[in-house]
Length: 487
Ligand SMILES: NC(=O)c1ccc[n+]([C@@H]2O[C@H](COP(=O)([O-])OP(=O)(O)OC[C@H]3O[C@@H](n4cnc5c(N)ncnc54)[C@H](O)[C@@H]3O)[C@@H](O)[C@H]2O)c1
Image 1 (cartoon, helix red, strand yellow):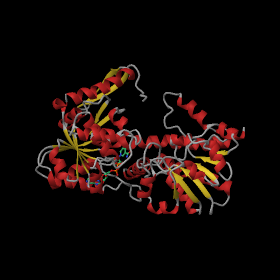
Image 2 (cartoon, rainbow, N blue to C red):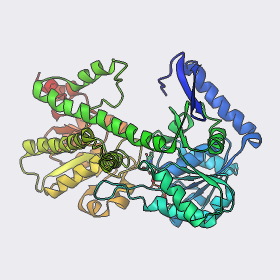
Image 3 (cartoon, helix red, strand yellow):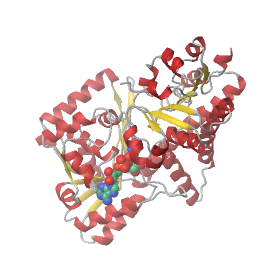
Image 4 (cartoon, rainbow, N blue to C red):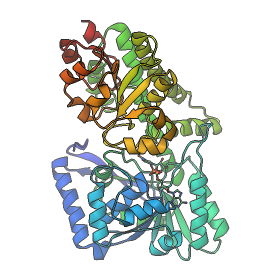
């Protein structure tokens, strides 16, 4: 695991609006200390334990709950979906997230992690109640806040004593105020505080991100709530930034939109590289060596997808419009993302002319590797476009096929799903790489070549090596590195 902290990197803490800067030692010192500190808290958890409840036990709620339990707290995970809770009570994990299953098993066995469908049981149990329910997009790009509002009403209906209500879902600025107003309306006599504590985990590395976060943001307007949140996060070694609620909410949308911007920047550059005869990876490398820019998120590909970036960018764009400060830059970030996929599909069409009835192998369904999440996956959008043109798609994914069948039942009926990447390419006109699973780079290219009708590969994630592909006699199309095939 790599971290950006070096010797003397600033650690930012704040309390009561005051920021304190101290120096941190290098990561070699921090990481063992972080794990020792987790173990220390587990050994002496009776001294530090806090009780918390998480309402919404999905990718964020379940992983957050399990990680809080791992560091010694007592956690109740609530979900309104009885099937999900039944699965968890039966000792199974409803999602794929590396390392999560083991932690859930350990913490359940130790009695520190419990599950229920009953919100009242959850609220009674805890000092701190997290909200981690979905915040999906409305068709106009604004955020559908009905799940948040419902949880606020559910909490108000059962709250009996002081609690800190923490919003972990990604929400538009000023949602904390609305949550507080809602609870106050239905439970006018009970004292409580609302906190915004945005989550920055990345699916696929969520456990590591939660146990060893880059930063912890606590948005609160009450010193009592800040103190409880700081106590809760005491077992974690990370900079803590305390802000007001509105700023904390904005931090999450601003950060995700900035990352999407970086992706669109390199993706548009990839088109320029192809037009000019340059190599986008070299350009990214040269840019990334500048510490002010950094190499992360400068990997050209099919565009960003997943359950966060598209919706968070749309939400932030809409919020900015509503606030009377249109963020037109973000509109262009979205346009570039759409154009990137269209350009890729055009490349396939340019080679194969008519896609009707052509068998195409697609490697990848999940929106990125190491997750089974196919929500707003560009790989799925790509398949939708190919199917719309009449192509016969045969797809495979190491972890995403079950969730694809659940989330995209109609599309799943129109394609063939196979377990083996080589079976997918059998008799296909072309191979399309849509998700950069490391497993795919281990498949024998000689075998791929033998099984394809013609050695034609479209690599939407720059997973394969252009020089090798050229040497092996493939016609290989990739993103912003096509000059290598023509040199
Ligand atoms: N997935 C990510 O990578 C990620 C990262 C950071 C932030 N977020 C944000 O976290 C929030 C949750 O995302 P997720 O991916 O975990 O969603 P998810 O769909 O995986 O999980 C949400 C869970 O909430 C449950 N739920 C809905 N209404 C409920 C209610 N009234 N009571 C109890 N449970 C209820 C659902 O059944 C579901 O299990 C979203 O706002 C998202 O934007 C997600």
